[in-house]
Length: 622
Image 1 (spheres, helix red, strand yellow):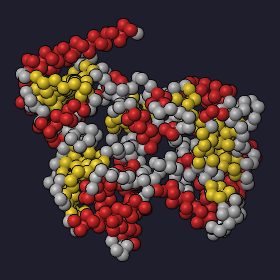
Image 2: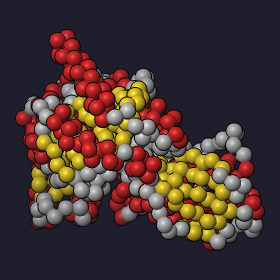
Image 3: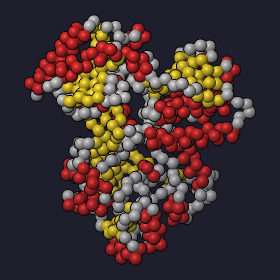
Image 4: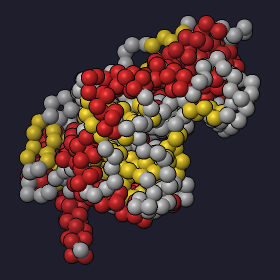
């Protein structure tokens, strides 16, 4: 629990004070949380409650309900849920939010975080939004500022929060109670599991993926040559460095064609279905906005765009992707139809499978012009209008599940390509008129592959049981290593550390404590690292097969327990404060108390012998 001297005054009507930041399990939650006190008059709480009702109309499903709470506590609890939803709306995996009344006018609120500053800001914004909605008459200017602040919060979460790819991995890990921790902060590199049972992810790629395969995937021309070398159906392409080469490229490839940068994904810089030299020039100019190198011109393939996701050498998902579109009603302009579409997508990208709003740029304008439609035209009832030439979800496209319809020959080729690439996770883009037919019989081609493919929709894949995503992504290899935690006073820790180093020598164990880490048979002083920081540093080492984590009672009440999910908690000389007893029972499977360092040492050796015997039994069984 980090204490803050400063007081954050969010509005003259209330006082918001950040009381603490817990880095681990606490009396309030098992995950890290920001702890805040909100103080306001009864009149202000009434206004906040009135505003909250309007917020629930404006942001459906963000506040939830809590029938067991009343008055100011209920208002603060619901606003905490709104703040949690705001933190997760674009990127994030915050799961903790709650409140409890302290006095008649003060409520204590806790909110999970990836970045504690953003979480405090989100709750402050929730209070300000409730006040704005609760005023009579409604202050439209203030509401505009709230919307702008919410959008700014979303932009900042793109930097500080886990991206939507790793969120799927986090969800799978949460279902199996496996820890996830940052490996390189603000670089989107995350570790799932502890020590020898860890796996490191960047987006959907992990350290088990081939660097060579990832390098080939980065260059679309190299990827095509790899696919051709495997005997897979591909389309011809040429690389264009100068506009003077375009006419020859068009003659060689033919119409229609596709223009794309060499080294980008997500549909960035891509224009499909180019049918004339007049359309080719702006398509190439658009691609060059994204790259300084040559531009690829490839033959357009008729059919639907499919993403085949292969994990561990097995096709686990297939989706058909279609370009974003609107359907006319005979009354609304194209502009109104697009505004309605984008409004629903901006509400909560996470709940909408991360379908993104349609971007209206010059490429969008040209695509509409090619269909002889303008944004002010009224679209006839029933007419479907595509808004871009490409179907990438990141560019506003839709997806539909076709996993059960993939022809065995297409499945076999996709899985063989994946194994040859060395990529544990790979997304192959395959275009065909019929995914259910043999690729020898109908036109089709593999156009590229991605080493960090999107996991869009996997967690809600029709017909798949709960937990299937975990089995596909991580299996049984990733998880926790056995850990015993020891809680003692700081003076006892200083006395026991030399003995602990002697006990750990020669074992495949990790160890940690305040300003101390042991891993891979060596120890070092990690100055300024608290117990939880040292524990995470130790558990990032892949050689650690079991571990001991020391926490001191003085840090416990400030920062929380270093870890959750440990096998046993050893408490020396009643170092556990009474108000933390219930938390200890949730942190460890078993809590054992010891009097004196000698008794503690015997207990630790008994645990170590038991763990070693268990490990031997597992080895013998194999």
